[in-house]
Length: 336
Ligand code: AHG
Ligand code: MN
Ligand code: MN
Ligand code: MN
Image 1 (tube, rainbow, N blue to C red):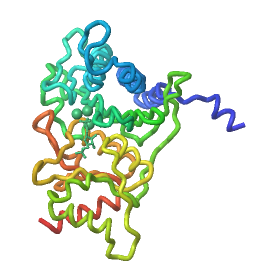
Image 2: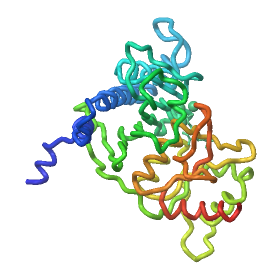
Image 3: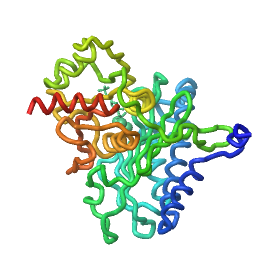
Image 4: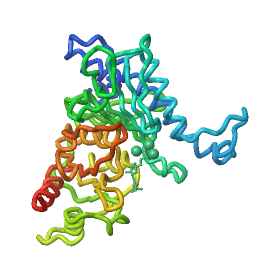
């Protein structure tokens, strides 16, 4: 009874990672321990996000809470949760978070060999209206095992060992790649476990959806403007694409990964490097897209080849179905 076996043979994220680890006999489970702590952080944020609305309703949000503490925004709260979880894993040495101006260097007694870059709460402008938000992370190995330094997190995205996101939406989904494909896990709240529900995700080669903030159209450069025009008024008689834009990168990328299509946050006159941050938004999502058979392009180069100089550096990004990104690359190449 394959169906029964499927039902009782629960492939949890921990079992999946342990299976992966068994392919690397040299690893001593450090990565598994690190991932477990990231997963713990996501479970906490998931429950906090789900309660945030209620807290707002019963007035605990906004001002001070019952202990007189200043009410923490979910950005700050989730940031604290991830920093603490990652430090307590004993497997990290440098942490970069969207919410911290400086990188965190873990004190020697708690130090491990991994560097984690993360966006603790992505799409936070969508919290109060209940639209999906998420957490994004990427994992590097420290370059040489001596004193950790900032250069260890200023590596191109192609050096990442793993990347993923957790989306807090109608269900809580954890999407992960450790360099051999992309797998999706759904939180079973009754078990408190992420169960493998989307094995080996592959993005459709071409899609029917484009995802961009059309409100920035007046500031786009030529190739971006031309591409979006083609989506709306195809010249080869093919049907126009649909526009879907949530405004949370995690939600827009998750839909693109599953349905196909393209997500764009282009450069514009106001922000020549676009808005999205290289280390903890562009790189992890680009890593996942390539692992799922898609592409990720900055307008100038393959996104994962970018070498960031600063930890909060931004870059334009075009990512999604292979053929759709190919069209943008051709338009930028023609511009050169
Ligand atoms: P964050 O909430 O972590 O700061 O990220 C918000 C980002 C990203 O989630 C989304 O794709 C983008 O902001 C939307 O920006 P616009 O509102 O300018 O379209
Ligand atoms: Mn973000
Ligand atoms: Mn954020
Ligand atoms: Mn933010």
